[in-house]
Each structure stands twice: as C-alpha cells, then as structure tokens.
Image (cartoon, rainbow, N blue to C red; front, side, top):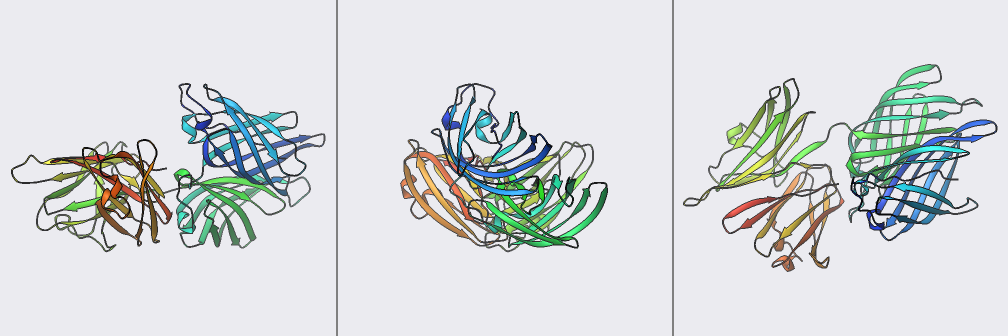
Length: 463
C-alpha cells in the first residue's frame, strides 16, 4: 500500500485549474501504520508526472514498513477546483486497492505538503518539483557540493525496533564520489561517524547512494528536487529511515563581467546582519582562465561588508575590452546586484542593473521582445563539468521559433545576440520566451535588451 496525499504550495487567491499541477514531482512521506498489535513506521519515496489535464502517469515509489521493503507503480487522475482544493485518485499495480486523496494546492505547484489519515494510517510529508521539470536532464554533475542533512526513523536490530536519527554533512564531487560525516543516535546510544562511497544520478533526477563506514555499508534511493534539495530513503531491509539534505553553500554568479572598450561593471553588496562579513570574489574569463582585473589587483579579492552596511566592487572603463563572469558565495544576510554601464562619447551613458544568478542551476528562462529591440545574452557554466545547453525559443503564441545547442567546457562563458545563435535567426521581429536547459552540467544566463542607444536588463528565472 502507498500512503501519500499531495498539497502543493498555492497562491492566496483562488485561481487553480488542473493545469496548475503540471510536471514531474518527487515526494517523501512517513508516519505510523496502525494495527491491533500497535503502530509500525512507514516511509515512502516516490515520483509521478501530472500532465496539467487531470492525468497522472509514471508513478513509482520505494517504501518501507517496519523494515520490510517494497516497490510500487501507479497511474491516476486528479481534479482541482478554483479554490485550489481537489481530489487525486491513484490506481496501483498488483493487489493494492485504488485510493483517493484530498489535495490542497498553492503557489503554482512549486512545493507541497501532504497528509492522509484513515482508521489505520496517519502519515504526512512533502512534495517537490523534480530538478529536471523542464527539458533539462540530470546526471552526476547535478549532485555536487556540500549538503547538510537530517535522517530519522526506526531500525530493526531487535524485534521491537529502535528509534534512530542522524544529522551531518555529505560532500559530493559531481563525478560520482561522496563522503559523509555526522552524529547518529540509536536507542539510548549516540556516536559520531565518517563514511565514503559512490552515487549515480539518472536523467530523471532519481539515483542511488552507497556509503561505507566502520559499522558497515548503507544504501539509499535519492531524488534531486528543484532548489538544491535532495530526498533520501534508506533501501536496506530492516530500516525505515528517510530524510532530506540541502545545499550548505550556494554559489552565486554574475554571468557577465566586462570592462574596457566602452564598458564599466560594478557589483553592489549589502549586509543586513549586525556583524561584519567577508567573502571571496572570483573573476573568470570566457575561456575558463582567471580574469585579471587591473583596478582590483588580480583575478580574485576578498570583500568585506560592514554590519548593516554596503560595499561596491568596480571595474572601470579603460583600455581594450576584457570580459568573463564573477562567482562568489554570499554569507547569510548579504544580497546585491550588478551594474553595467556603456560609455560612448557624445551620448548619455547607458546603465543596466542585473540580478545575480545561481551557479548550480540546470535551466534558466526569460521573456524577450525583438520587435523593437535586440536581445543579447551571456551564458555561463561555472560548474566542474562540461555543459551541453539546449536553447528553445517560443513566440508569444507558444509556437517554437527555433532551437540551438551550446556546449561550454567547465568554467567557460559565451556571449552573443540571441538571434545570432545557430538555428535562432527566426527570433528577429518576434517576442516570446526562451529557455536555456543544461542536459548536462550547469547554466546561468543574463539577458540584455538593446533599443537604439539604450540598454536595459532582462530578468531570467531559475528553478
């Protein structure tokens, strides 16, 4: 049996339709299953696809009940009301009966809480959009960085089981290697540990992890969700343990940093905390080599932002044009933006304010208008692996105007006019939407709009 009820984070105003629930989602649920002999722990990690038309397909899950494991497949239907309530009916393979759940949606399906209660089940959990909800695919490079995690559940070294919790850190290299360290509690005992192992991520963002420590080997099913969150489920018989991990440090990127040749760039930072903070800022040229900024004394620098204060980093116009991108990890409480200034004699200087992007995203989308302007883009791969980036452009009626592919080596960047990329000449004279999706590696995009002598920025959205 499978115990899960969706509730996708919804908008305060009533506007929902079946189209609101659309895409591929992962869920993690746990809670007690009741019987005459008492309560047994249940945990389940699953995936399904909603088509935006009331149909569910591709449902599959791994579950554990009191240490006994099983897998399930399912399809289903759903119906949503304008107030974002509705029902979900799932049809399971095998002898498991169909089940109908109540749904409460919110905020365009970007997150989900769910709960289900019956005379024998009291379970709840969370649902997240898969990291590959767009046309991008996941791979080992999609799971890279330092993550904090918390697992909890029950393990069964003895008949009655022992409550278990485990918190710590996992570090992945984007190449299939993983290490872990933390602090575990089991029954009345507690201990620290360290483990090493391997992982594998499939194109649909599901995968497996195997970790070996002094106490033995543990196996997990995992799922990569949007926003750098990872869902874990212990797949070893005898364990009903699950949890989540989240990125500890999220690298930010300004996908273009240009100076000289009539261009000036600056980065502004503000600190909302009550203590001074410092972090490192790195500049990389389009070809992946360090980009020396003469005015800043090199290709990297330490930025200090006073408590409740602000700071600016400037690369003035002078000499021939040099360009690349900037990366940094912002401390908690620090935010900012970039500024480009075009300086042409005899004309008023033109500026564009641009937001920072997340370096480890695998897709980016923006709206363009080439009926009265020209769209320029900067595309950065600040990750450790080569990125194959698929570009798809739709007009304002949803018709595909063209597609293109860009391959960027690790730490490389490219810039150009959107309509100048191979296969995208049809962009000229149209307005619409463009998506940059990394089928491998990472992508961050910055858009600029040139109208006559004026230049403005185009905000890009990331998962």
